Length: 101
Image (cartoon, rainbow, N blue to C red; front, side, top):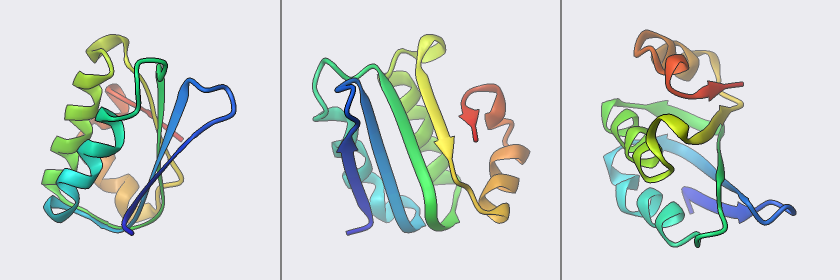
């Protein structure tokens, strides 16, 4: 499965792990991963350690997650990016919107 979710031990952090291509084909699964997380979730971690490809639709999906999580007050970190994915996020100025680790 390209998108896996888990709840951290604190019960407030949702970890969304994306494997392979992060593109429009994962749109519904990505959206379901956070929309069904429940009201206790206040922090989000998007783990891209196994993501091989990221396109403009994935950038849009990250923005939708940001809106869902509270916009400017959202607590979202994008972690474990490979150099290609990191470059795309950097070119798109996403480090101004997300904590990228």
